[in-house]
Each structure stands twice: as structure tokens, then as C-alpha cells.
Image (cartoon, rainbow, N blue to C red; front, side, top):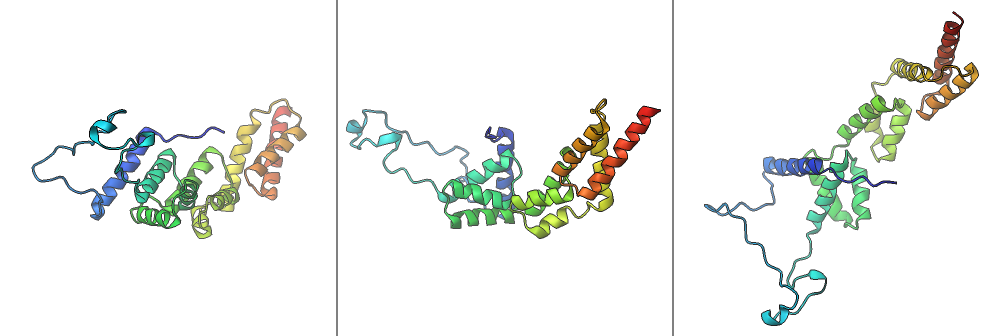
Length: 230
């Protein structure tokens, strides 16, 4: 399985969105530059190998410099979240699981995710609506299949129900008919029973109820057979 890598442009946009949200909230953690100075602070130079004796400082293994601070856990967690969001939309539960896998302290993870939720960068309601629209358009999934996927991604059942609320029985059947007619055009020459079996299996994989799948497939295959006779 190929691991998806963060897109550089999306990562930049995610970081910019966080910075803009923090600035708008007046809670940016970055200290302002000194008045009249636009220069960046000078970077500390690391000693080259063999310079320890000349400087009087002991060599530190693995390229570390004596006095280097440990990474700030909050900054580390924030970076992980931003990289995940650069790959694609994520639910809060998905981000929480990823932070746990990367060894982040649960309290730190909660603090970071709470903050990003407050800023609107983590929003399960928006995530659910986006996933429903995307999967409906690209895969033709039924409402039941979409709710199941949202549940697997940790989205609250009420949010999942609201995101799929517009998928009434009429729209479900219309989408199933569209999928069947599109697929049926690629099955010319096959026995009608084979067509029906494959079409019904396709709708079942996409989560459509048996009754809907049976009626839609029956009507489509019968209509196709009548056209062939004509």
C-alpha cells in the first residue's frame, strides 16, 4: 500500500490558514520583531567535528549540540496535524489516532485539536459534508454506505445523519439507475442473467438496499432486451 505524502502547496496553505486564524484570534504564539528591525535572528552555528577541543565543549553524538532544547510537544503535534490536513481532509478522530501513533501525549493531542477546532481547521461537520459530496459524485455510494464510512472515520452519528439527510429514497433510486445504465452500456453481448447478476452485485457493494437494487436492475435489463429485439 502506497503511503500518500503531503502536497507541498496544500501543506503551505494549511500552515498559512493556521497562522491567519491565530492572528485573527489575537493568540499567535510568535513574538513580534523588535521595533525598527526586520532582520531575522542569527542562526546558531553548530561546531564542526573536531572543534570541541578548541571550544572547550564536549562533542555531542548524533549531531546534537549541548544545550539544544527538546522539541516542544505542542509544536510537534501541530506539525503532524498540519501535514495530515495537507494530504487531505481528516476527521478529529483520525487526527487523534495519528497523533497517538506518533507517540504524542493524549493531553497535548487534545489541546492541539481543541485549538484547531476552535479556529475552524478541524471541523467534523464540514468534513462529513465534503466526504458525502465527494463519494456520492465519484463512487455513487448509497446513504447507508456513506454513514458507515463516516462512522469508521470517527464522525458522530448525528453529524453523519445530517450530512446524508438529503439522500431520500427518490434520490437514492435515481442515483442507482444512473449507475446501472452507465455500467450496462459496457456489457453489450452478455447474457441478460449475467448482466443482472453483475449489476446487482455492483449496487450491493455500493450499499444500496436489495429491494432498490432488484427493481432498478430488473427494469434496466428488461428495457435493454426489448431494445435489442427491436
